[in-house]
Image (cartoon, rainbow, N blue to C red; front, top):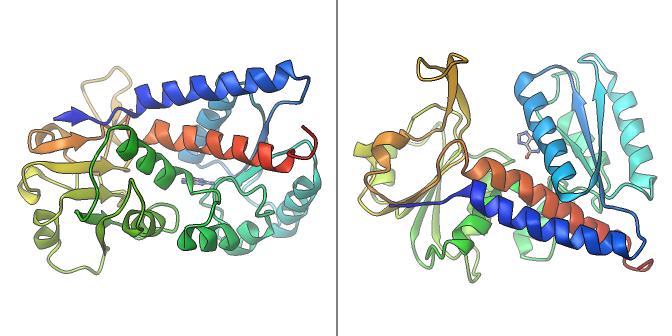
Length: 295
Ligand code: GUN
């Protein structure tokens, strides 16, 4: 079994990014700048946004977190987004999801300039992704593709099963894995809560990407030997193994499934760090594209 180690790979990519930032600074230019909008007090969202801020610091980007109360009027949020769209000192803007129920998520995403949409959630960017045109790939799918590529996992003609059809992970990764490209060129099945006989599908899959948000859902008796496992889940469970009394587990029963897998991502330390570094990559791409006439 080979560990698809997102911690090590993301460190290597962060080093490359910080070298690029140093070059930019040595030319007397401003640093790339990512802004994250956080609404409400969802603890997981808070943790993710802090991790993104930390990564910005590590690679030498400027970062700003704009925080709103849970009951912020939608117009205020959109007004701020439109302001940021016009700010020439900001290269990337993300609005951490999920948003409170009174806010229309689609309208908010639509308000972000597609040129600064480093999450790749804007319909223009998703459309470009669908067509295989250069764009910002959503960070988690981008991170998964990078892991598969860097570890030389063969995807050509393989049966790839995606579990979960979210807009953030399941749907975009199913499109990317099914494209005719060098590093992702599989036969894809997208399964979800209404899928029947999931075990038939998992037993037939060469690659399984699990993004369900159900702790340790995928068991070892559901997979074939040699399977490649990508675990996107991050679930907090009670534990007597740690001092804090809780620990993170994925959507895969890692301790048992790892014995049958040829490649597997751990949780934590697999897809999570790759998501964050992919967002950093997108921010640098945006910086270069927005500033190309100035440099
Ligand atoms: N919520 C869960 N994942 C993400 C992500 O990649 N970007 C944003 N903006 N919100 C999320």
